[in-house]
Amino acid sequence: MGTHHRDISLVVFDMAGTTVEDSGLVQQSFLAADAHAGLSKTDDDRQRMLEYVSDTMGQSKIVVFRHLSGGNEEQAQAANKEFERCYAQLVDDGRCSAVPGAEELLGSLREQSIKTALTTGFAHETQMSIIRALGWEDVADVVLCPGDGVRGRPFPDMPLTALMRAGAPSVQSMVVLGDTTSDITTGLRAGALASVGVLTGAHDATQLSAAGATHVLDSVADLPGLLDRLRSA
Image (cartoon, rainbow, N blue to C red; front, top):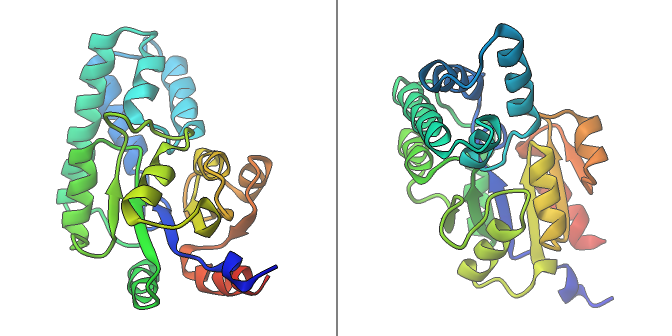
């Protein structure tokens, strides 16, 4: 096993729940979207939808709304727009902060010449409002969300697009990290060296392991120790 095989050249991070604190902002924004677009008919309906939103956390939000609207595109778009508006408003109101250690980690990876990518299931505007609120315009090498030619999670498109944009040599030099089962699936489908779950967000260790996580960490702050272990493996 040549040492070169274990060079890590890119870490692909999820945002909300992984590098960015998400204290119920998704649920709050979903309820606003539901009230606006009338997705649920009853309280039971609403409860079931909230469970689905939690299960599918990390996936492209418009895709989730298409499912919840039963394929009614107009309703899905209306709900998604209100969701994005509400989330951006909460971010602007100062309800957005970095997960402890995330910013330092992004800086230290850069010092080690490891490229970084920030990815999300949110639309571009919401992603940018989070980045502006945190002052993270320059902390990552690649910033990606679902869009033209880039499918959201659980497809492998975001890590693979990040790999190409970062000029990384191989999927075997990439680590993917997130707080949801769809982050894990995305990393596995992209062939990453490690598909890592963190416990600061939507899903617990059991869910992340069942999805096939290669490692589960308490938080993104624990990544340096894991990278050292991966390098020396």
